[in-house]
Amino acid sequence: MQNLLGDKKAIFLFVFPTFLVFTVIIILPIFFSGYYSLLEWDGFSNGKFIGLGNYVDLFVNNTDGFTKGVKNSIVLAIVSVGIQLPISLLLALILARGVKFEKLYRTVYFIPVIISTVVIGQLWMKIYHPNYGMLNIILNKIGLGFLANEWIGNTQTALGAVFVALLWQYVGYHMLLMYASAKSISTEIYEAAKIDGANEPTLALKITIPLMKPILRVCVVFSVIGSFKAFDLIYVLTNGGPLHATEVPTTIMYTSIFAKYQYGYGSAMAIFIIVECLVATVIIQRMFGKDPVN
Image (cartoon, one colour):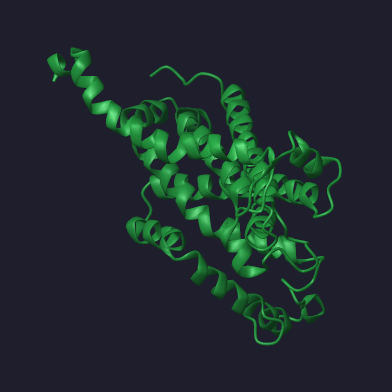
């Protein structure tokens, strides 16, 4: 194995096919999208070069609510990092300490991740239904009927209702990553700390969480980027409505390209989302700094 790792030709032969596939599937489409974003093009006829005109329409002369969609996606990213990840971390820490039925809980929490997003959308549509939805029924049963609402049909509650479904779907995903990281920490470290008198909260705050820093950074990156790219569940639940209350950049991009045939304009949105994700990733990497030395 050492001889193989030291052979640069062998490394090239193994790496180049993957690099080639990655370039064809990922890099080239990005460059094509960048070029299309400079055109006024419906996807069928000859495009007209308009320079940065589509980008000006996105942020200066915008009429389709793109800037509001960007704000919604940023709010979703903040909520994901501020609520979803702490819940995932708490569950991971509890399970990693070895509770009864640990494997059962781990599997149950991960089930939403493997269920089709369309199915999840249908489930939450039933929960939020104003007449027979489980949420309104429970509120009426416990005397809080005045809070019953048309959750995804009301512009005041639709965005929050969609966010709840999105956060619920991926709590188990982040929990599993954090759980695996917590379980990989040597038990000898905990035993030494317990001899020094450390209790469970101290073990979590002083040992487990600091040593989980690399995976926490990954989870934050995944959570933020996932929020910026969120599309399928929002599309199934509300399709950006009511009255564009739950629009995010991806839903507006989909409508622009496939309903309005504004391929160049939609490509500008795609490029913006890519740049937004790259910038967010760099900022998060800088915020977390270097990994702790083992």
